[in-house]
Image 1 (tube, one colour):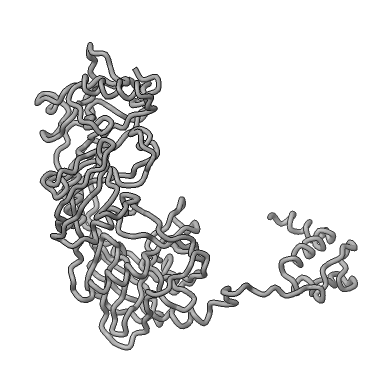
Image 2 (spheres, rainbow, N blue to C red):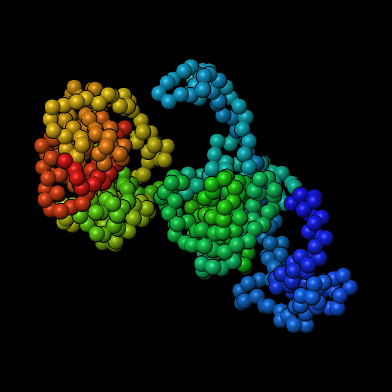
Length: 518
């Protein structure tokens, strides 16, 4: 509001009286105290508008469970919350900026042209014992060479890493000393959705910042965050950069979660935050403190959701379960006969609702234990028994999934004299076209050589070099195989077909419309 506007506002006394009247509805006694404005009779505004009298106001009491203040609780627990500062070395490129598809000296961190640069980070943590064990997020201290824990009295202590679990983004630090204030986990009665919670941490390096809100939801699935082992607790208490690793408390001062992620369009708080639930955090950190290696079961599959579009393309109505997009060669699932295109519906007879639930069920299985999967294949349920192996590290899994030379990304489209199917021309896989498109020898299916960009496949990004591994859960080796499946589904009145596409070493399910498909 500019200066002139501001002055004009106060010259209009009628406006002020109306503003005071509006305040009275929300401010009670404070507004009533102003009712004698400009010497008028109590309760009467300058323009004659009647204001609410203080005597007429009935104090509104907060409902049961709503505290008048969080001060006592925050005063009690905040000394156990610490700020964490980190230092580390990171190689930065010194050559020409990266361009997609081009490599230059000094562009890669591993090249001699890179130079090391010191990087600093900050986060939060909290004591869980009097002898100096601190819980935080793994991403807060990852790559750090030097870690400092700063207490509420500004005392700084050097910390060492006791253990980390990247899969749950948890870490435990240790500082030397004793009689540290600490807090406890809430493991018996978690708060309900709508209950008050308080987050304490170090956002933007403002140590011991406390924010209040409520539990918004339980069981949030954040597969995009890189982990599938946690049903996250969602809260609306403001958490920002630097809150990572800090605690969320219930009204009794017990830790119900470890703040770890936010959803934000701007990089700052947008009212949607996520915490690792106390039961998971307690179990993992207790093992790290005892020096127990975190081991998880593994069966060697890549999975995706059974989306409504995929279910429609498969002619099923049930969207529960996990769709197998690929199996690891010679892995437990591969040895047991699990196939790409299978939908896992049960583990040891217990229903599986989603890919995340399958991941957690298998992770909880001990290495060497037998596991029976109930899978839907060709409309029938097939039970397959396998032996769980030890899950490799996240780093090894990433290398296994993304490593290797994938060859040229997309050779030019080639025209053929064969009529297309659904706007696509496909060919059997031969040594020649494997070399042309950079395809591994173990990939099975038909390779797409031409795509009509006006077709549904073209609109959804299919391109020459993509391989159709399965069509409607059936393997295809020739264009005739593919055309036959499409024709059968069209005659059956199916609206769409689900293709399993191999691209860059990964399998992806893609539903395509059969309407008007030639």
